[in-house]
Length: 218
Image 1 (cartoon, helix red, strand yellow):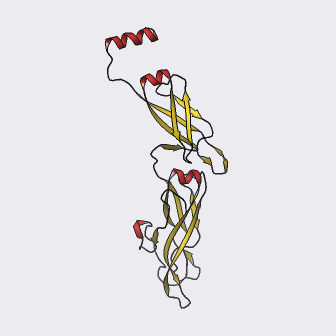
Image 2 (tube, helix red, strand yellow; image 1 turned 180 degrees about the vertical axis):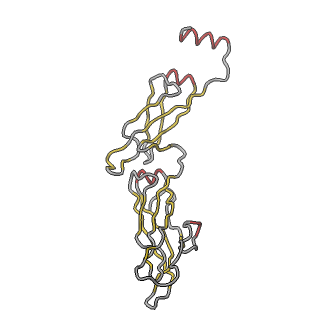
Image 3 (cartoon, rainbow, N blue to C red; image 1 turned 135 degrees about the vertical axis):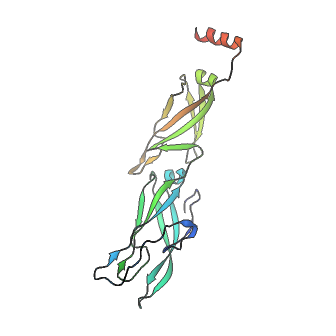
């Protein structure tokens, strides 16, 4: 199992779900047998993942309980463990389908179970497609004179990035190939984009104003 809080969780079908994992199963077998079995309504469930899990990839184990038909045609509860292999670079909205893992009913094909990847909010980064965005807070003096940004990546590496340009409110520093892996080719990555939150002083003294005018020109 992967890190970031993945692990075993319980689920119930047929309106008996643990932790509200699943919506109600949907309409059942209807009124009697039909000549051509129909398929049950699709079951969809969010699969929350951390950015670390989506960056490095992980394995999640999901425990489900559902009803199956025995040889006599009666329903019996069973529990199963589903293994979901999260690949590096997967995005929010990625779907993982398990065929016919819904409840079994006479003359009905069980529903498909679909997990839909969702991204948990991260304390440091936000994701924009294949890019990662990091916001660094700096005082005005560093915006004008330069600074050094220290960043810990999603896989635990420490980056030291010197900024030598004058930083304005819309300035971005681009660090190539330090974004999210691209799922179709995990050897390639998006970019790391560093944005800046500049803290302007609330007030300046007369001497400070004079010094800034002398330094920067009137």
